[in-house]
Length: 465
Image (cartoon, rainbow, N blue to C red; front, side):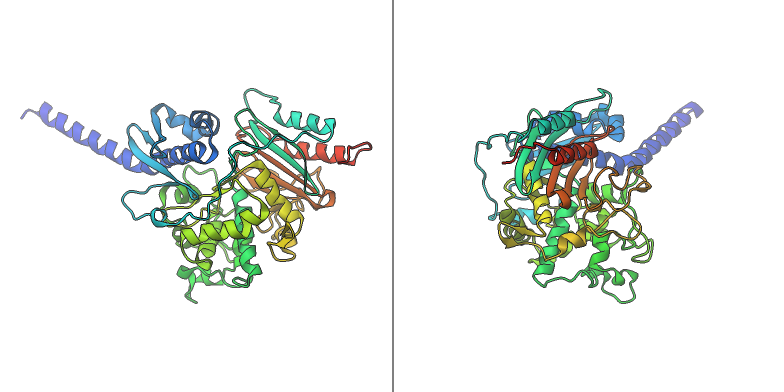
């Protein structure tokens, strides 16, 4: 063979090795991208009943990382199998499958899947026709809602999808974007953490947990393990010492857990502490994955019992008729960020906290749980599953967002989720405001909206009904 022939072979080998190495290093990133698309569009099609192509354009494509691979990304929605597949360059495939009652989950190879054998007998069926839209009780409220939906900059869209306003438990105004209605389940993202906190509260009510006890995580039981000292309260408050896991990194512990790991609670339990408990706050999806495992284990240890528990103890008594909390392949609810519910359902959940854990005459949460949830953690604006309005200076690390809302009352506290999901609770005004949307690079306007509503309600001549 000539020297030229040997050089060709060497170049081919080096090129092949280079491409293999590139593929190996890019695999987690690209599988995260396809997992995000398949999971999101599966939920859009089969949980929310939305157009998956529209959701891809509005929810997935504006993400800076997703935009870089969109040219090579393809997805298919199989309505007969109720699943969505996504690939990049025909590889790095992800598949999300819908199961009634359990939502959509990513399938990880040939691993056994706990949802396949789980019972969903607790699922409720809703009426076919959505109820009529409630008219605002005052024209000035209509004007405030108009402003919440108005797009001020076509280059940075708010994409508000729903606003619901409750005063003292009565629906006084609501509005929806085209394609959405009063029954549309909308992804709450980290509003789900507030729900997980409520599930912990129910277990506390029943004497099955105490917030001051060591977190019942099997992998942390050894007294020699520094994580043995982490309490349930530490996990709820995100001061357990686990790392800040939702940063601007390409792949974070949170995205790895959601998109690449079949067992979210087990993945979270493997993570080391980066600080001593109660000394440092860090936004922690890992903490709420662990709490989700605690809930599962306390109510029977499997997905079927967990679904029955959350419907029997929370969804049904509160009147959340269109709520779906998704599960991972190990049968653990993804309580860190994957619940879907209608805007009215999210508002009913907020009303539960406004009424100190009582719904329809039944005590759901322990007495004082609402106050506990809104009590400030360390020198932060976070409580226990909710954000408080007690810190209005400075920004949340990594995010560049303000801790609180300066123009709103100090007693206000709120649930917050990615892309502009909010449940705002103002006890002094007996007010709950829910705002849901797909806001990437614009202000959601939630503070201005709530302030406008408060001004209307405090003004002379407000219509009483």
